[in-house]
Length: 224
Image (cartoon, rainbow, N blue to C red):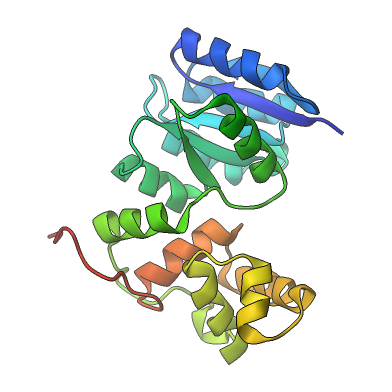
């Protein structure tokens, strides 16, 4: 089955370029385009795409607000939202990840990486390189006023798995570290996300750093 993609960007040239690249790839279908967040929310409901490529800054409704609406709207049928940005160290990107985005892609990435990114997102995996994730966390993380609900319900093994997820390890790599089966790791990840009320691993990474379960190697900026 084809991966159904909705492209959202306020620049027509960007949308056209992405459509041309994705339409030329096997098993990927661009089902619609939107020029702002309001259109994105409406089309997400009517077209139910598998993946939404979402610009961060747009008129009418920004990409972060649109993402927050889409990921909580059952009518959209749970698409993976991937943010499009010009800079990898962008506070808006971090806010989008907290809002439910499954990762981000730079707008000037090569065509083959765009196609691979869409396929990765559609498969339910994350689009966050560990090095970039750490840099984002170090730059923008702010500890919450209180511990996230559900954290105390995690078993010691689930907490251990969460730490590895926060480091950017795949299920196979976690299985190797813990000397357990990959299917077992997948079960732990699923239960961990369910207990914490998270939709995917990206939100698990953010929560792990914000809750102090995993800490950045350094802090590059002190926030008031």
